[in-house]
Amino acid sequence: MSRVDTAERNQIWLVRIQFDSACHIQKLLPYRYENRPGELYERLGKGWKLIGYIYPEDKASGRITSVTREEESP
Image (cartoon, rainbow, N blue to C red):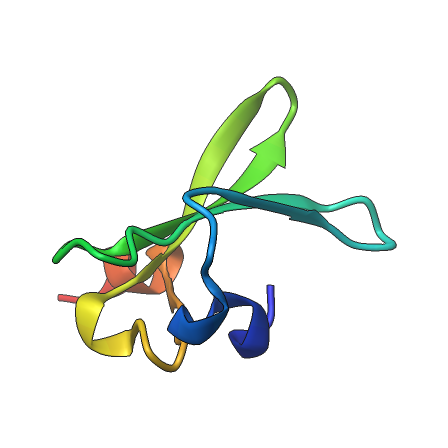
């Protein structure tokens, strides 16, 4: 999902499912009105894998923090 897709002003649903031409399916739980991070998942097999967070301070811009990068930080 792009920053336009994840920006707070574009979040009118509780859940957003999107897939691209390469058949990647992603699910966004924006938690727009809650003081907790939004969550971005990607469909893998028969389940969903958490791939990123949108922290409260980043909700307006839609900036996604990768779960991988977060796990690698000291």
